[in-house]
Length: 151
Image (tube, rainbow, N blue to C red; front, side, top):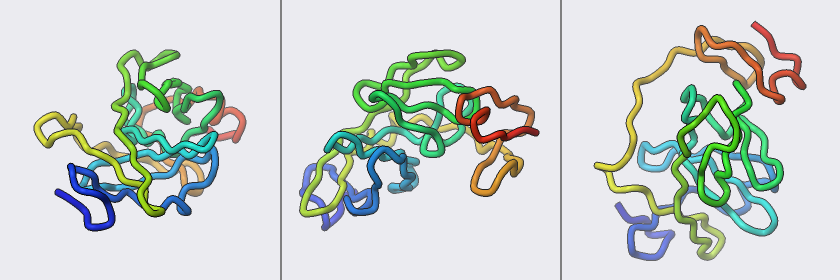
């Protein structure tokens, strides 16, 4: 699929550059693919918006020192560069996507449809305004502790 706001070659528009705040992850649903966008140090990065440990959105986490931390259990990913898990409980890397800024549009290149990892939908329990916890999970991340979230 191509997007007229982006150049040809498989690029699709994720959002406008002005829609991403510095060092605050943002979610975009691009052609049914969940994308976490991060703007930091003058660059924009894109990754699959899903922790490889418990499938919760990474866009609800925090960005520090070139890494993103999952808010649920504290897994950290060097997702802004190559995607490997930096700390447990996650052990698998997160998918990193190519990004192109074109005339104020953030364009990304999605993996081919046959290479997109599909996971079943999960049930979530509301735990705080704007946050969710996967049913049966315990919270242990720095973000969770700092915000005082509990079951």
